[in-house]
Structure formats: C-alpha cells, structure tokens
Image 1 (spheres, one colour):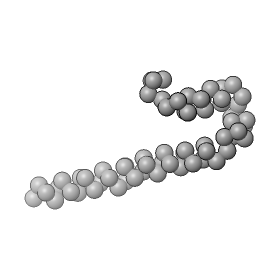
Image 2 (cartoon, rainbow, N blue to C red):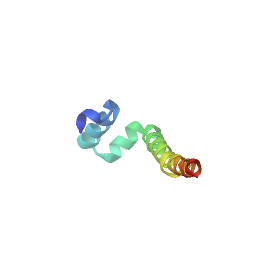
Image 3 (cartoon, rainbow, N blue to C red):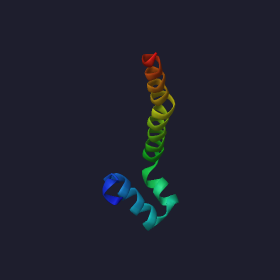
Image 4 (cartoon, rainbow, N blue to C red):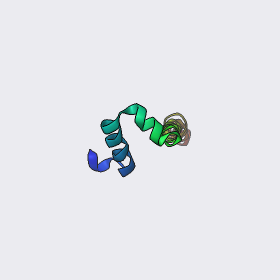
Length: 63
C-alpha cells in the first residue's frame, strides 16, 4: 500500500507521527485544508455527478 501513496502524503504522515497533529497544522497550514477540499471535490464530483450521468445516459441509449 505504501507504494501507491504519493510522496507528499508519506512526508505528511511521517511529520504527524514525529511531531504530532498540532505541529503539523502549524507547519503546513492551508496546504492541508486545500488538499482535503480538493479530495472531496473530486470524489463527490465522481460519485454524485459522473456516475448518475453515465447510468442515465446508458438507460436512454438502451431504449
């Protein structure tokens, strides 16, 4: 599983383990907030927009 994790995520995990969550937030700041926001934006876009669109598109083509 470690080989599938991006390098910056591995660095963040090591920093959290070494110095704690509070220190991690102080050092990285808005980068962490942006990364979490971007992750959920992409995930929700796929789950709530792309998959239903593909399902509806396929159902319309089958008739």
